[in-house]
Amino acid sequence: MTLRWPSDLPLPERNPYQRQSQDPRISRRREAGPPGSRRRFSSVARFVSLTIDVSRNQKAIFDNFYEGDTAEGSLPFIMPDPTTHDWPLLDPTTGDQLQDPDGNALLIAAHWLCLFGEQTPTETIRGIRFQISFPVAVMP
Image (cartoon, rainbow, N blue to C red; front, side, top):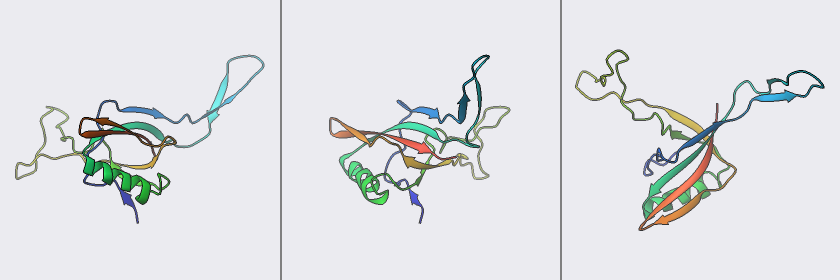
């Protein structure tokens, strides 16, 4: 069974989204001349820092997902790509939003295969809401 990001949770916020790719190189030290390197991996993971703003009920859903479903973050899951999923599909020439024959907007569907990162989620109380920040490794 493949775990999925709970549909009751919002997509992560765009700010403070941050992404860094894993370094695929192995450096070779030389006595003289420029440094050299070669690839260690054929593909690399991307490390992404995400934040969600949730209600008390949604916090309980996230806690259950992290602690129970993913076994404290040790199991992979699929989540919508917050940088692309549900964005409108645009005509490459005009930039106009594309629509189906019924006039409904065509939206991009993009998903990530993720693992929670090395740091555990952190939460901050903002009035009656919770801000939960967590890193994920997006698998290639």
